[in-house]
Amino acid sequence: MKILQVNASIRPEGANSTRLANDIVARLQAANPNARLTVRDLGADPHPMLDAAALGALFTPAEQRTPAQAARVALDDALIAEVKAADVLVLGVPMYNFGIPAQLKNWFDAITRAGVTFRYTESGPEGFLTGRKVYVALARGGRYRGTANDTQTPYLKLILGFLGMTDVHFIYAEGLNMGPEATQQGFAEAEADMAAALA
Image 1 (spheres, rainbow, N blue to C red):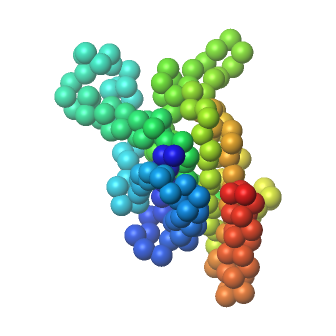
Image 2 (image 1 turned 90 degrees about the horizontal axis):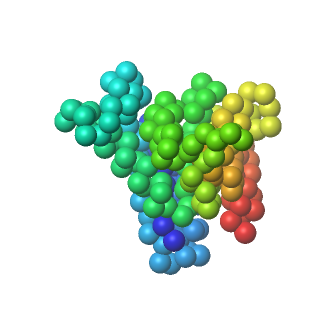
Image 3 (image 1 turned 90 degrees about the vertical axis):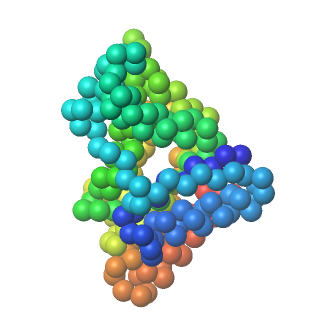
């Protein structure tokens, strides 16, 4: 088993989403002692955003790219290769202002490439990244699960499914900024979600 852990928190230490992602990975490794782990820390090593220069590089035929364009495309290629090599993805996702971190959006922009990780057909889009399990560790200061204010879960289901990843399990730790009792409850609920997802 090959595990890709993607940490999206900008905090170098003490990130609750990273803590949850680490816990999920530890359980996967305990059940699969030969599992190999790759960690992509988007806070420590943020991927560049999709801008006009990057778009121009992607739409330039490979043999016509400048060295700078080739280097920019290679950055995205490396992320795509990591995902393609993985059997399991574990995403550590904090909530920033009701959305996913910009660093994670940049990662999705990098790995979502027509003709490589998906294609459009007459019957709609087809994702190529099938056959992978995905565990999403969500850490939130408030409580938003199942409400209209949870924009993360629908977006993540949509983009992962678009790429062909439909076996997705969400683990929620919520209320982490609402006092000690709420924090304890939030991690207990995450523990229950984790146990169910990994059963």
